[in-house]
Length: 235
Image 1 (cartoon, rainbow, N blue to C red):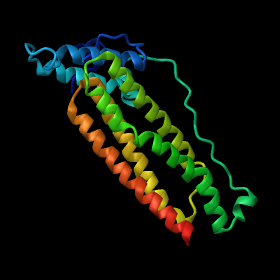
Image 2 (image 1 turned 30 degrees about the vertical axis):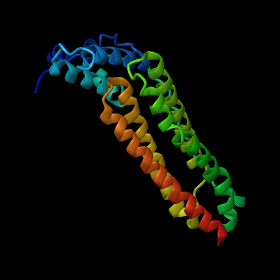
Image 3 (image 1 turned 135 degrees about the vertical axis):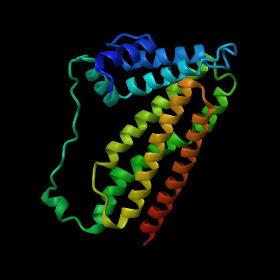
């Protein structure tokens, strides 16, 4: 096994991305995008350095993830000031909640969980085609790409809020199937957001197409959830 000092000298991801050890996530992302543009064959046909691209991708994969970056920093002997991580507060069921009947639990869950989540899903899912069409004019235009990145950030924010609502109240037994559809729908969106984000970094159409497929899967799951809720409310 290689010693830590040897590994540091051979594969220092910070040096690969040309950033400091204190670089914030935005700096990591910016450095990666610039290097990808520099080495991408569509921009520089004369370059054929697959090893460099592989090193750049690996460096970004490690440093863009807080957990893997923290582990990597420890292997280099780098210490950072710890950041506080907000933990969810577990709510104890009140006497009133314990005595709610199934219909009351369903009404509460529909109002405080299902409805706000479906509104957010509409914002997230219904705009992707329009965003891609706008970007298609010139994916290498910084302004258009920034608009697309803003859309991804908005999706990420809506997804985070949807997760909070999803955990606000336990789903009643009668809505277990609907909750399952929402859960898997949100998971598909989360994966889709990451794929779309990777596209903005390396301009690889495969990530864009995968993101679109995950969006379609999320659309399908949203539809199943809506059908399930409509059926449940009719009965």
